[in-house]
Length: 180
Image (cartoon, rainbow, N blue to C red; front, side, top):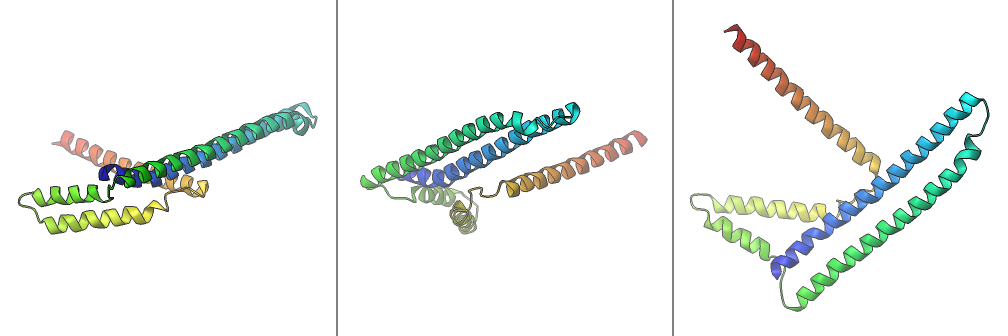
C-alpha cells in the first residue's frame, strides 16, 4: 500500500498540471473563436459597406461567453473532485499504516542488486532526481499560456534545427558515397 501512496503523491502534481493546461487551452480556444467570429463579421461589414459586425456578432459572442463559463466551471469542478479523491484515497490508505517512500526503498534495493555497478552513484542520482521532481511538483501548473506557447515554439525550433542538421549530414554522406 505504500507504493499506492507514492503513486498518489506523484499523481497530484501531474493532475494539477494537466487540468491547468486544459483550463488555459480552453481559454485560448475561446479567444481564438471570438477573434474568428469578429474577424469574419468585420470582413463582411467591410465588403457590404455596412457596420453590421458589432450588432450581428453580439449574440454569437454571448453564446461563446456562456459556453466558456460552463467549460471553465466544469474544469474547476473536475479539478476539485480529482484533488479531493486523491487526498481521500491517500488518507484512507494512510489509516491502514502504509508509509510513503516504499517506491524509493524498492528502487534502492534494485540499485543495490545491480552487480558490477557503483550503487552509491546510482542511488545519489536517483535521489537527486526525486528531490528535483518534488521541488518542481508545485511549479507544474500553467499560469501563463503565452509562456507555454513560447516554450512549445522554442522546442519545435530546436527539433527542426536538429532535423535539418541530421538531414544535412545524411545528404553530405550520400554525396560522399556517390563520389567514391
